[in-house]
Length: 68
Image (cartoon, rainbow, N blue to C red; front, side, top):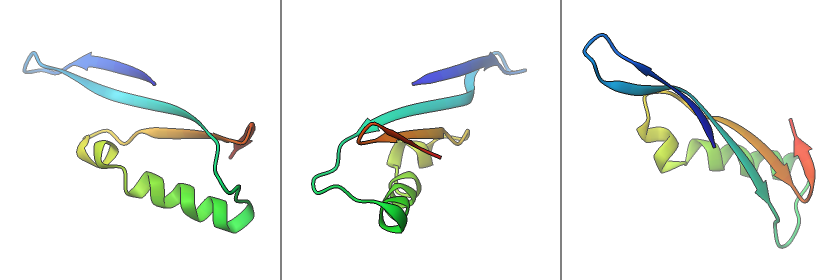
């Protein structure tokens, strides 16, 4: 995880950018549309990501292959 933090006008700090690099292995392996649907649901259903004002940027590596 990488992020950029800035100081607001009110003196509080906050994230303005968040990037998550996820390297996963699925059992059983998935591919194509099924894999993309699963990753989309994982991002939409992420409790922490949904709790932040700044939306995380997710980068997925599945079974050693980067998924765009």
